[in-house]
Amino acid sequence: EKYFMRVISDFSYSKYEPFATVALGDTYYKKEEYPSALEVYARFVKMRPGHELTPWAELQIGNSYFSQRPSNFILLPHPSEKDIEVIEKAVVQYRHYLQKYPEDQHRNMGIEMLSQAEGMLIERDLRVAEFYRKKKKCPAVRMRLKHISENFTVTTERNRQRIAALA
Image 1 (cartoon, rainbow, N blue to C red):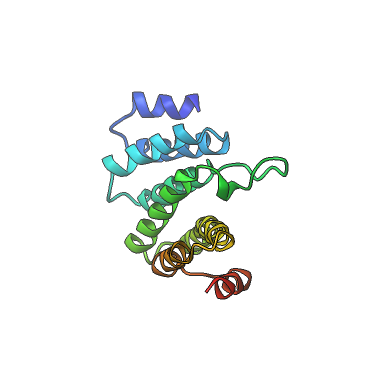
Image 2: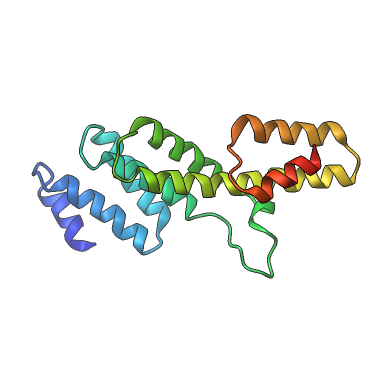
């Protein structure tokens, strides 16, 4: 980390500075310092939108958001029942990345991560819809199902079955 910081500060106009900046973001990410990684990647994308490492930094922004998702520890409520704003931000970022860089070498990772993030948001909506079904609040159930169909691609058979049961 300190060597990357030195290259960034002492050699800011060299051809190595962008690589050191992304490597610094990767270092923060690997150390699970996701807000710091997010800041480094975002600054890099803003300052160097046409650089060869920009697609990777864009993907890592989504990964940094997604890695801050709530824990799935068994004694705590399900992650979909907690504040999952970071997952919503990750979905927006993954969609942006996939749209902007359709030929990027890490595209499959982006697709997989988008699927996981959307799966958590779908789970949240399905749990809310199931709650409203128990309360016999049909308009609220329909609203959640409509939200799922308009905003997400349901990829698991289990979720398709839950949606069919709610419909």
